[in-house]
Image (cartoon, one colour):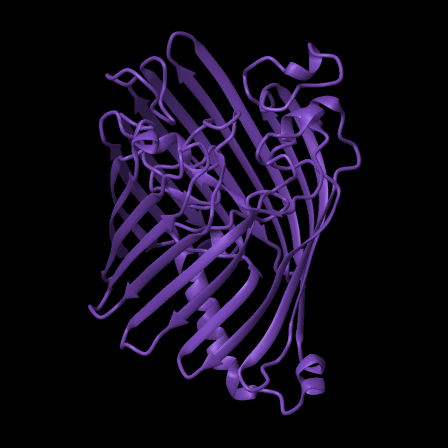
Length: 456
């Protein structure tokens, strides 16, 4: 139950703390810089339960028809980052990401083109930071983690934004964030499903972005062009054991909406009750979105999503939770920019978008165990059961991320992760999810993901 939205704040706080060790000269700033890296070997095996278009169309599937079939993919990757020491409050950072899939066949290329397949390297981060007192500005290409703007890292190439972000911690127990972004880097060159035949490559930064929660609305993708996005957020911890978070996102001139704008809202409260032998966790979240003109209004993404979760942690190594979410009638909810925004009821692998459509009620039960308590350091397991009911709209016209018939979906998910103590930095993880979707027919699907990551 970690809160991914806090990672950006943690990064800035670390940067503020390190400023006391600032370099005296430019040469020292580069010489005392820090290099980080990660080597990856990942194996994915996906069965969508649908026919594979690559087997029936000569030359592979055309643009916009990918994402069906059964195929596996082995990928190797590298992440190499560098950040200089601080000089008069200034520092520079860069991160390269590389991916290579040496054994991919035609089916794998077609199935994984939008999210995993491709070979080459991309400069995902190239930024300058400036810290003055308790305020830090970060400008350039960068990874962002926040509730409404979030770079998903669940695929080999992590998403990134070209952005300017300002963070301030002058107010007691409060972090304030403001940001602007005008470009986005997806997972592959086909993240918008515009490349024919599965010939995806490394992504580039474009004036378009994933707008999570819209479903397959734009040529089979959830990617839309836009003309700048602004965000503001606040995190407050003034009340003991309670964290309050709020964020607002404004997206200007969204593609296909006749110049319409999107307004996206987020509010969350996380309360921890320390008990003698465990912690009780109580969480509640609101997500909502509004549109600005008749064309955009006709897409029916002016929905509200309410979520609640209660759980326990640190109970002799066990943690567990029960979560519920509901979305308003005939209006879907925009979750935000990037594939990173999540919900309490999101299945482990399938992700949050299946929980944010109009007329959706979802439930999730999760149980985990840390084997450190029985002497196996670094070994953790997790199990989930998720049920999602989504009814078809009661109105005529377009409702993004809706269903054409009443649908019931169930997901059984599991994860095993092992941080090997004898080789610091090496993590092995295995995830598996079995899904069944029932509407006018029944579709069974599943996916397995194995990851070996070595950080240095």
